[in-house]
Image 1: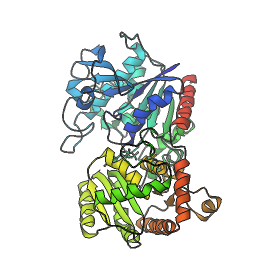
Image 2: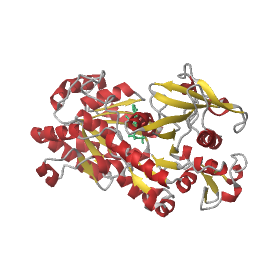
Image 3: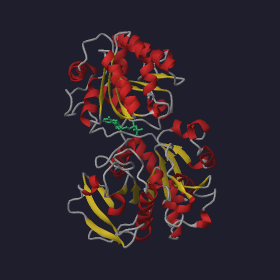
Image 4: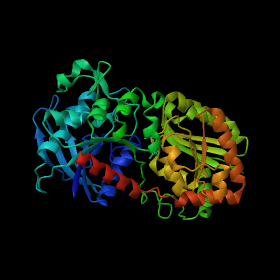
Length: 478
Ligand code: ADP
């Protein structure tokens, strides 16, 4: 059985800010089905520490970047965890990356360098415990927060391979070159072949250059990442690693996201059951009856997610009897603009906040799920939408390109379409897509076919878990 240490800065259901948490939370069970024994290394944020129950310390560090720390082994919600309990780094208010005031924690470089150091330590020394020693054959890191792992592995003389998954290239984990000593990094490797990036230490680049294999969360995003527009400065580095770069689309937890058993919704397995859920959702959002499609959107509210494009394109939807129910939180300017818009238009309803249960009810009650992202490594809400008969209306980019089959005339004629895609990613193209969506919605048999096709798509983890198993095998081969 291949043993893999997954290194993640968030992991559902313990701590989540985005899709990375869902993947880190789902991967262990998905990989177990492929014969992989996966444990997950997580920072000991307060929300994680609170769940450890009878977890036991298995490794101690006298001084890990400025304080004592230990690794606690625990089983929580079916996840085998190794939690880095380092109070000086993680026991504080705020989110995983930012303070309550919305600023980055000033010592994020040390916080996640510590996570990487702990990962390398486990890979080299293993964990001795009552359950027996465990040492991974391979380390699988997620995003920049795990990026310095290969540097510490190298420093410890280890040849344990490292696989890096890019969930979002926008964040590099850069810090000043002056921090080399503080982070215990090798000065001789502070150059462009390793973790130096324009004079700074870049945790992401350390991962990209040190990984045996790199993947991102869709094939299209893997290609996009090698272009200046999407690569965010790392396109050259990725191009150089082209032969080791691949795309593996995320799955979703089809037990949690199952319209036949979901406790949050009127249960259904065919699109017919949606009517009840839709009425309930309209009532919950204070929306009136309408003839057009009830579109839903669940998202972080940031520039990436194209919310501004949607605000401009809304007339195309509400002008044809359509409606919007939106749940999200993020940039204040977007929150304010959305609330103002909702106040002006009875067919637009907005809830600001983070509400997992409501997001289920929205997939169940929505006719369409909107994802107008400017870039989207994979995207999860369109997958939830497919499973719940909420037809995805998405930008043609990244994972949105790979998981939705556009209702163009050819796909409609062949009966394979599952959604609506638009390109270029502008408010005009989105307006056209919303117009098309309203037209398709009126054609009830075509719409029902779109829903049925979507509900049959294999959106679980099985195919992707096989691809990860193959990736691990390739990395282990060297
Ligand atoms: P990203 O990781 O860029 O935020 P993804 O689509 O990959 O985007 O994943 C976002 C995840 O977070 C999904 O599971 C989505 O349902 C969830 N989510 C985002 N915002 C909210 C919210 N306001 N309430 C509930 N769930 C949310």
